[in-house]
Image 1 (cartoon, rainbow, N blue to C red):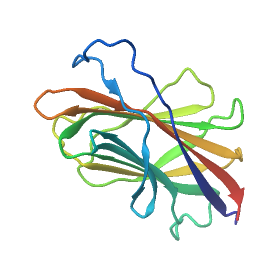
Image 2: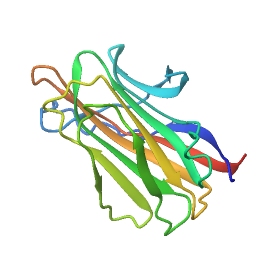
Image 3: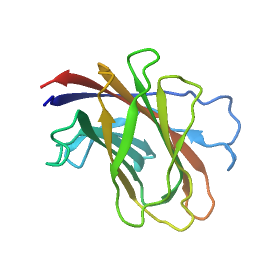
Length: 189
Protein backbone atom coordinates (compact mmCIF):
# COMPACT_ATOMS: atom_id res chain seq x y z
CA UNK A 1 0.00 0.00 0.00
CA UNK A 2 1.38 3.39 -0.96
CA UNK A 3 0.46 6.41 1.18
CA UNK A 4 0.71 9.95 -0.10
CA UNK A 5 1.53 13.05 1.88
CA UNK A 6 0.37 16.52 0.84
CA UNK A 7 2.27 19.69 1.60
CA UNK A 8 0.13 22.57 0.30
CA UNK A 9 1.62 25.89 -0.70
CA UNK A 10 -0.77 28.73 -1.40
CA UNK A 11 -0.16 31.37 -4.04
CA UNK A 12 -2.32 33.86 -5.85
CA UNK A 13 -2.40 35.19 -9.35
CA UNK A 14 -2.33 38.98 -9.23
CA UNK A 15 -4.07 40.63 -12.15
CA UNK A 16 -3.67 44.42 -12.40
CA UNK A 17 -6.69 46.56 -13.24
CA UNK A 18 -6.48 47.97 -16.74
CA UNK A 19 -7.18 51.67 -17.20
CA UNK A 20 -9.41 53.83 -15.05
CA UNK A 21 -12.78 53.01 -16.60
CA UNK A 22 -15.64 52.10 -14.30
CA UNK A 23 -16.31 48.35 -14.21
CA UNK A 24 -19.27 46.99 -16.08
CA UNK A 25 -21.50 44.16 -14.97
CA UNK A 26 -20.26 41.98 -17.86
CA UNK A 27 -16.54 42.18 -17.02
CA UNK A 28 -15.65 41.12 -13.48
CA UNK A 29 -13.31 43.27 -11.40
CA UNK A 30 -10.16 41.28 -10.54
CA UNK A 31 -9.53 40.68 -6.84
CA UNK A 32 -5.88 40.65 -5.79
CA UNK A 33 -3.65 40.71 -2.72
CA UNK A 34 -5.38 37.95 -0.76
CA UNK A 35 -4.83 37.62 2.96
CA UNK A 36 -4.00 34.42 4.76
CA UNK A 37 -7.00 32.82 6.39
CA UNK A 38 -8.23 29.56 7.81
CA UNK A 39 -11.00 27.53 6.23
CA UNK A 40 -12.07 24.30 7.94
CA UNK A 41 -8.92 24.34 10.03
CA UNK A 42 -6.59 24.61 7.01
CA UNK A 43 -4.73 27.54 5.38
CA UNK A 44 -6.74 29.54 2.87
CA UNK A 45 -6.60 32.65 0.73
CA UNK A 46 -9.14 35.38 1.54
CA UNK A 47 -10.02 38.03 -1.06
CA UNK A 48 -11.52 41.21 0.36
CA UNK A 49 -12.83 44.49 -0.95
CA UNK A 50 -13.25 47.38 1.51
CA UNK A 51 -12.52 44.97 4.41
CA UNK A 52 -15.39 42.68 3.41
CA UNK A 53 -14.69 39.04 2.54
CA UNK A 54 -15.86 38.26 -0.99
CA UNK A 55 -14.10 34.95 -1.77
CA UNK A 56 -12.13 32.38 0.24
CA UNK A 57 -10.28 29.40 -1.26
CA UNK A 58 -8.34 26.48 0.18
CA UNK A 59 -7.03 23.02 -0.72
CA UNK A 60 -5.96 20.37 1.78
CA UNK A 61 -5.17 16.71 2.07
CA UNK A 62 -7.76 14.41 3.53
CA UNK A 63 -7.57 10.93 4.95
CA UNK A 64 -8.40 8.00 2.74
CA UNK A 65 -11.44 6.04 3.86
CA UNK A 66 -11.23 2.31 4.60
CA UNK A 67 -12.51 1.39 1.13
CA UNK A 68 -9.86 3.63 -0.48
CA UNK A 69 -6.88 2.67 1.67
CA UNK A 70 -5.95 -0.35 -0.47
CA UNK A 71 -5.83 1.68 -3.69
CA UNK A 72 -3.20 3.97 -5.13
CA UNK A 73 -5.36 7.06 -4.69
CA UNK A 74 -4.56 10.35 -2.99
CA UNK A 75 -7.53 12.13 -1.39
CA UNK A 76 -7.77 15.93 -1.22
CA UNK A 77 -10.44 18.58 -0.66
CA UNK A 78 -11.05 21.88 -2.44
CA UNK A 79 -13.11 24.49 -0.58
CA UNK A 80 -14.54 27.73 -1.90
CA UNK A 81 -16.60 30.11 0.20
CA UNK A 82 -18.28 33.38 -0.76
CA UNK A 83 -19.11 36.47 1.27
CA UNK A 84 -22.61 37.36 2.44
CA UNK A 85 -23.38 40.11 -0.07
CA UNK A 86 -22.33 38.16 -3.19
CA UNK A 87 -23.53 35.05 -5.03
CA UNK A 88 -21.56 32.59 -7.16
CA UNK A 89 -21.62 33.10 -10.94
CA UNK A 90 -19.13 30.41 -11.89
CA UNK A 91 -16.34 28.34 -10.37
CA UNK A 92 -13.63 26.62 -12.40
CA UNK A 93 -10.92 24.33 -11.04
CA UNK A 94 -7.98 23.28 -13.24
CA UNK A 95 -5.78 20.43 -12.02
CA UNK A 96 -2.32 20.18 -13.59
CA UNK A 97 0.75 18.11 -12.82
CA UNK A 98 4.42 18.96 -12.66
CA UNK A 99 5.11 16.31 -15.31
CA UNK A 100 4.74 17.57 -18.90
CA UNK A 101 2.22 15.49 -20.81
CA UNK A 102 0.95 13.68 -17.69
CA UNK A 103 -2.81 14.12 -17.50
CA UNK A 104 -3.99 13.91 -13.86
CA UNK A 105 -6.78 11.39 -13.38
CA UNK A 106 -9.09 13.17 -10.91
CA UNK A 107 -12.32 11.70 -9.54
CA UNK A 108 -15.04 13.40 -7.52
CA UNK A 109 -15.07 11.47 -4.24
CA UNK A 110 -18.23 12.99 -2.78
CA UNK A 111 -20.16 16.22 -2.53
CA UNK A 112 -23.21 17.39 -0.62
CA UNK A 113 -26.78 16.49 -1.57
CA UNK A 114 -28.41 19.16 -3.72
CA UNK A 115 -25.02 20.33 -4.93
CA UNK A 116 -24.94 22.49 -8.09
CA UNK A 117 -24.27 20.48 -11.26
CA UNK A 118 -20.66 20.26 -12.39
CA UNK A 119 -18.93 19.05 -15.52
CA UNK A 120 -15.48 17.89 -16.48
CA UNK A 121 -14.35 20.11 -19.34
CA UNK A 122 -11.68 19.73 -21.99
CA UNK A 123 -8.62 21.93 -21.92
CA UNK A 124 -6.05 22.94 -24.48
CA UNK A 125 -3.40 21.80 -22.02
CA UNK A 126 -2.36 18.17 -22.30
CA UNK A 127 -1.66 17.89 -18.59
CA UNK A 128 -4.86 19.50 -17.23
CA UNK A 129 -8.22 18.26 -15.94
CA UNK A 130 -10.93 20.90 -15.47
CA UNK A 131 -14.06 20.87 -13.29
CA UNK A 132 -16.64 23.57 -14.06
CA UNK A 133 -19.60 24.73 -11.96
CA UNK A 134 -21.67 27.41 -13.68
CA UNK A 135 -25.34 26.72 -12.96
CA UNK A 136 -26.18 28.42 -9.68
CA UNK A 137 -29.66 29.73 -10.56
CA UNK A 138 -31.49 27.31 -8.26
CA UNK A 139 -28.82 27.24 -5.55
CA UNK A 140 -27.68 29.71 -2.92
CA UNK A 141 -24.64 27.98 -1.47
CA UNK A 142 -22.22 29.96 0.64
CA UNK A 143 -19.62 27.15 0.54
CA UNK A 144 -18.65 24.66 -2.15
CA UNK A 145 -16.76 21.77 -0.55
CA UNK A 146 -15.63 19.20 -3.12
CA UNK A 147 -13.76 16.04 -2.22
CA UNK A 148 -11.50 14.51 -4.85
CA UNK A 149 -9.33 11.48 -5.45
CA UNK A 150 -6.20 11.63 -7.58
CA UNK A 151 -5.04 8.41 -9.16
CA UNK A 152 -1.30 8.23 -8.72
CA UNK A 153 -0.62 5.77 -11.53
CA UNK A 154 1.64 8.33 -13.20
CA UNK A 155 3.24 9.38 -9.87
CA UNK A 156 3.43 13.15 -10.46
CA UNK A 157 5.52 15.02 -7.90
CA UNK A 158 3.18 18.02 -7.72
CA UNK A 159 -0.47 18.78 -8.37
CA UNK A 160 -1.48 22.39 -8.97
CA UNK A 161 -5.08 23.49 -8.39
CA UNK A 162 -5.88 26.77 -10.15
CA UNK A 163 -9.29 28.31 -9.65
CA UNK A 164 -11.30 31.04 -11.35
CA UNK A 165 -14.11 32.10 -9.01
CA UNK A 166 -16.61 34.68 -10.25
CA UNK A 167 -19.11 36.22 -7.83
CA UNK A 168 -21.60 39.06 -8.23
CA UNK A 169 -23.30 41.39 -5.79
CA UNK A 170 -26.84 40.44 -4.92
CA UNK A 171 -29.39 42.34 -6.97
CA UNK A 172 -27.27 42.50 -10.12
CA UNK A 173 -24.45 44.73 -8.92
CA UNK A 174 -20.74 44.59 -9.58
CA UNK A 175 -19.00 41.30 -10.45
CA UNK A 176 -15.64 40.14 -9.06
CA UNK A 177 -13.15 37.43 -10.04
CA UNK A 178 -10.52 35.71 -7.88
CA UNK A 179 -7.89 33.46 -9.45
CA UNK A 180 -6.00 31.64 -6.68
CA UNK A 181 -3.51 28.83 -7.23
CA UNK A 182 -2.43 26.12 -4.78
CA UNK A 183 0.41 23.68 -5.39
CA UNK A 184 0.29 20.39 -3.53
CA UNK A 185 3.49 18.34 -3.31
CA UNK A 186 2.97 14.61 -3.50
CA UNK A 187 5.48 12.56 -1.53
CA UNK A 188 5.80 9.16 0.00
CA UNK A 189 4.61 8.96 3.59
